Length: 55
Picture 1 (tube, rainbow, N blue to C red):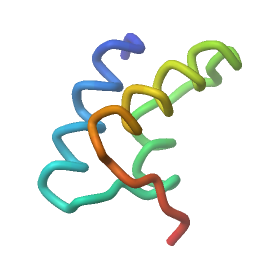
Picture 2 (cartoon, rainbow, N blue to C red):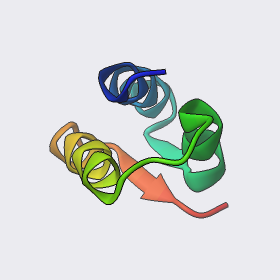
Picture 3 (cartoon, helix red, strand yellow):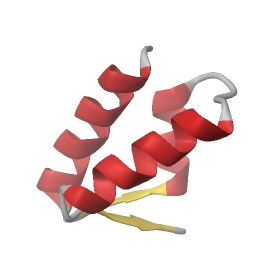
């Protein structure tokens, strides 16, 4: 899955639940990401008001 697809799906989960867990995000990624990609994802979630939480 591409980084924009990961961001879109993570936002969908976050809008539904008000948050996304690290486990859910890791399942979406399905592969190792570059640090820049991780930063893009976290920034996009933050801008959308989606909390990233540990379970």
